[in-house]
Length: 85
Image (cartoon, rainbow, N blue to C red; front, top):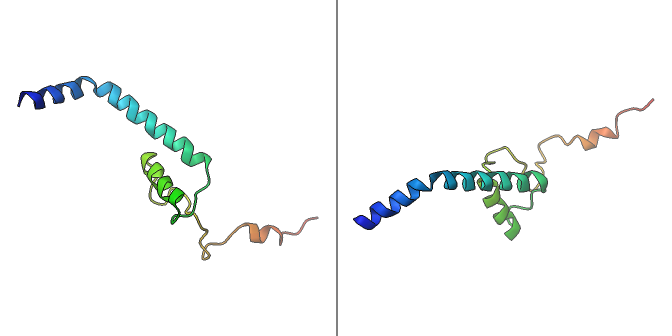
């Protein structure tokens, strides 16, 4: 029982450091996610990338998937159709 209390006390005393490290991990993961393109979700790199996305608290529909959705209009298709003067 003393060992458990000792561990809890040590964690409580180091809470500021733990929160700083957690914040730095989130920021670093956010920079990686924002600065790289999304790999295919089925590849090994895609699985690692998914973990990095969760670490950066970037989940749900906040980031593009690895392949474009054919149902969504791609703006590049219509740029060629815009008349120039």
